[in-house]
Each structure stands twice: as structure tokens, then as C-alpha cells.
Image (cartoon, rainbow, N blue to C red; front, side, top):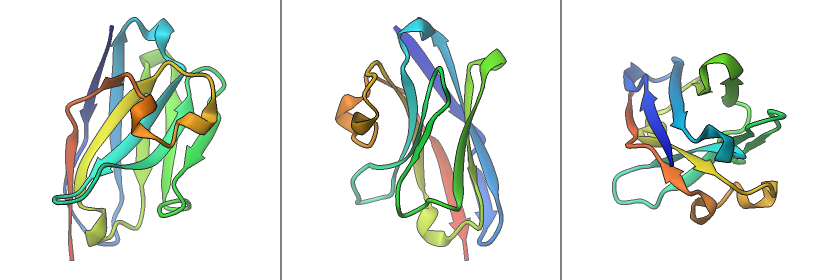
Length: 126
């Protein structure tokens, strides 16, 4: 089993930045990638970014590419999502998830992730 814990969410003003974290523990040897998803009220959960666990290759949603950046700290088993120039429409519950799959084509779809954290709330005021 893999446990994931997100942190770093909060209430921020539009135009500012926020860096949220996801700490992985347990059988981290099972992880092939970590992804970030978000879910706004009344909407479906949507992919934001993913990073391969070993080689750190990154993958992004078209909607936030260029504003959001995913990275991994090897020593701490931590994955970050740096979010810049935040907008009110970025308000959502942000989840990290771990995939055991090697194929990067799968990382865009939540059904290919095996483990999920509880989420961290990000609220952007205008």
C-alpha cells in the first residue's frame, strides 16, 4: 500500500502563487508516477500534471501548462505542484494520486491511478 498526504492549500488572492505538497509513504517502490488532479464543486475531477517517479519526466494539462509546475524531491518522497498567477477558476480540492503504470499515456486519466490522498483545498479570491 501507498499512503499519500497533501498539504499547503489555503485561501489566496488572484495573481499570487501557491506551492502544494504530496508526501508518499509505504510501498513507494510500487510508484511509477504521481499525478495532481483537482475537483471544483459540481464538476468532475480533472488532471493537472504528473511526474514520473524515477526519471522525473513531466506531463501537463493544456489548461494549466505554463502556470503550474510539478517537481519531485527525491530525498523526501515529496511531489510539489507550484501554481502561479492563480485565478478564481483554479479554486478546487487538489488531490495527488500514485500510479503503478509505466505508460505515460495513462497518466492523464484518473482511472489509472491506484492510490489517492484526501486532498487539500485551494481557494482563490478575486
